[in-house]
Length: 355
Ligand SMILES: [Fe+2]
Ligand SMILES: [Fe+2]
Image (cartoon, rainbow, N blue to C red; front, side, top):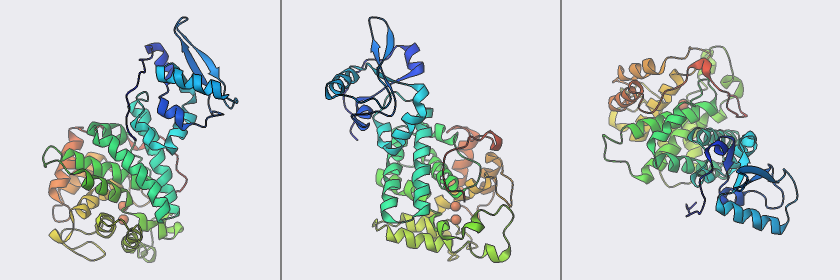
């Protein structure tokens, strides 16, 4: 969505604490004749916000025109008390975050994670192309948002969810992997946009093959028996098959699915490839995936502290790309992209599928 020039004026500070000034683009994205939340109009003469339309009230064409004009002037607001409705609406049209200038970074990060969790959950339930396209669209919006300011990742790091589910793990791996990518920006020549888009999609996608692993295995709260463990490795191949069905014409999804459990010394699976045989995306996904698994509470292992987990990866140069592991460890120690929350300080994020 293109940004456009606006005539909007800034909202008085005490008002912007309790209300959002609604952008014309966001207003236009709501149904025209009935709104799911009330609108308020700023009256300069009294320095106050007064209701202009109630929730679900029928809005006439003349009123719509007036509201649109007032909105262009920056005089239309929604209450922060209606944030759940407002955020749910934006969540379904995530590219609105790229044009809105009134939501705070933390609010955008929450909305973005809510949207990605919803799309990821849908895709895990139904790993087919039309569902993937909705996820991909939101991944591109998220990517655009971080691309324009990499330090925005800080607010996403604070939302890493350390309770292990397939949705959380996929989103965490996306955030942590992107964290490694952006932390290397200063060292590398900056990554090309096309490659960045593909990498972030691959990070979120890497474990999609798990969607076909029996649910009772994924939801078990006790350690897996040997015969149950055997059912896990094929998720790499299943993921690669799903990736091919997306018909994207690029290899990163297949590489992330196939290679995130491969290790540099050939001790990984499924193909036991080693060293340079493992692609760049495969090596990145392996680190992000292992790191996110290690810092999550799992049935068979307690969550590790992020700095300790990163250190273990650095200390295993025979398994993991050491340069990437060092980038991750340094970024964590320097808190370059914020901090990961404590396990018990976790907020519950919405998401339907527990896995
Ligand atoms: Fe995996
Ligand atoms: Fe994974």
